[in-house]
Length: 288
Ligand SMILES: Cc1cc2nc3c(=O)[nH]c(=O)nc-3n(C[C@H](O)[C@H](O)[C@H](O)COP(=O)(O)OP(=O)(O)OC[C@H]3O[C@@H](n4cnc5c(N)ncnc54)[C@H](O)[C@@H]3O)c2cc1C
Image: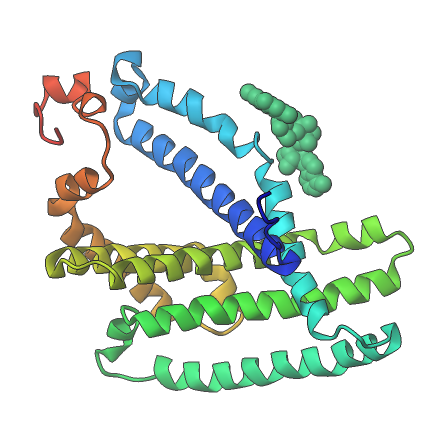
């Protein structure tokens, strides 16, 4: 008989959370990327012969089936918030409430204060380092981690306050839902960034590593740019630095553009899917 493999329930939950998060990230990205391409190609992008509409029709529903993206994002958040509760396993509910009321708010206050001071020092520097540090992977990772940590701990506190205030726990959860989903998205962004960094580390080709590093900058800066309002509201990004994020994105787009054929090649798209009709009419075989 085959021995039954022991499954660690915690690891299993982590794996489910990771799979849910990556499903959301990949399907949302595919839908957005195809729409971007369609619009970039104008009317030609809408022509069936150029295949973007078929791709769009095929992939759009992935955001809904195999688990709706909102519901899966909730699952990621619930997993993360449960991990919080696991830390205080063994405490009575009253002890837990006391712990959360004191410790969680302390952690947030400490981090926020330190973050503000450090960030203000960095932001008010007059040298060119300001833009440069946005390309520093450590800085990018810290910005991702701090956002996630802050969103999670404040979501935990708001959930707790809402569950004390609202009679119905469903209403209590809905009251904080936008915040909870934001925390989960911040977590997914970090998982993707960490995977990207690990991927670059394991790449044996120096030239490819450099290219991937630029692409990773583009990813990190785009995520920061999309949540710029949050970073600025929480004093983690000054106005000057926020402008530098956009400059950084534009610079990276410029440096990466000549390497687009290599990047497309790297994705391993089958030959027969490359070189659509509109490319034949204009600049034949450029990507093929
Ligand atoms: C082409 C296609 C093929 C499919 N194939 C299969 C299949 O082979 N097998 C199978 O079992 N199922 C299949 N499904 C069903 C699919 O899994 C469901 O459509 C999906 O789970 C979403 O459920 P729903 O359609 O009932 O939408 P709903 O759950 O009603 O969702 C509608 C909206 O409400 C939101 N929403 C729902 N619940 C919550 C919540 N708790 N909190 C916040 N917002 C919420 C959603 O985000 C969404 O925006 C298929 C669906 C499609 C479209």
